[in-house]
Image (cartoon, rainbow, N blue to C red; front, side, top):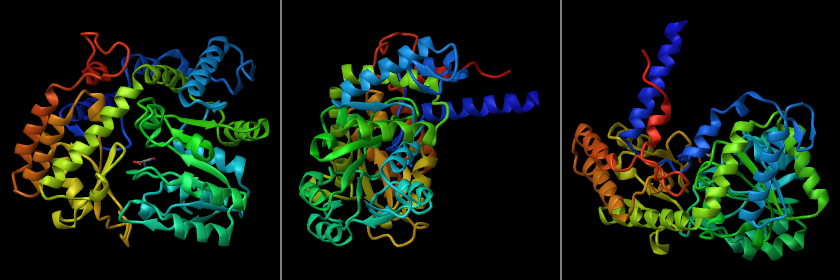
Length: 429
Ligand code: DSN
């Protein structure tokens, strides 16, 4: 069995080295700060703390209680809201907690279609199906890559769901919650926002603020544009009854223990975002717009051209001319540019996505700017349009990446010894 252990360690090391040499453009990924990362391997990882601070089912939780109270306070400050719960262990688990709190089996819940960019939580085979709720799909404006307000008003008035979820995994532009708010009030529906992708942009003041625009509940994962650990969060404004329902949705509804090491890392990440988040969010969006423009200038079919391509960290490229989403994403990855195939509006088969999704949260975190976005677009153009070999692009991608291996926008960023990819551990053997 020692061999299996060595093998896993070697594979993890290879994985890290591969990412060290690659351009990471997955829109849902990011990097932890040094202080957040060290908490993931702290003793907190080994402990249980079910319940709430001061009301635990276990002994030995005094420091955990203080960390959780601090984490809650930082979350409420960052998102300017009355309520936070940091016990969901992922974004999907946070969504399940909300569904448990707000909906009963058989209820109708408004949402977007997967092909229009919704997260799999909204699918019958995902969290919606697990809670037994039925989706009511909003109408989509594919040119503006957002909800079609007039047609969606008609749908909502006709079907009258009690809860309306807003949020996407292909999240290019803010959603028209403000415009739909009178309709939600008219039919007595509660607005709920899944802000996983754009959480750090919301907190940085660079995206719509759903809790100010008509949603009372905000759920999210905490490791995308908010560069924290893989974890989940619930945020809300609303009365004590709503808060209590959300709390019990989180525990005992959908979690038992809440991964204390990740919660501590989240506290660090929230504090760092309070300090550095505004500038980080601004730079992330500027890089996305620069990358989109550079790809478009090189003949790529980047969606949302008339609206400046994106207002977030994400861009979507239709790649029919480059062989389709699957082939294009695979060729990019082979050449050291890591992205993912993605369904785009109008796609009819989930097995044949027509697009590639690119995000700038991670490259921005590593200090890249608009000059590097031009260089990345040129690499993609040389690979997918000019037929340059993957080996050449891979070498050039690694050269470009060489100057960007230190995480920025956090405390401890300047410590000379710290390089993100070194923290994988000693080489095996
Ligand atoms: N599936 C993730 C994404 O890539 O958007 C979100 O959970």
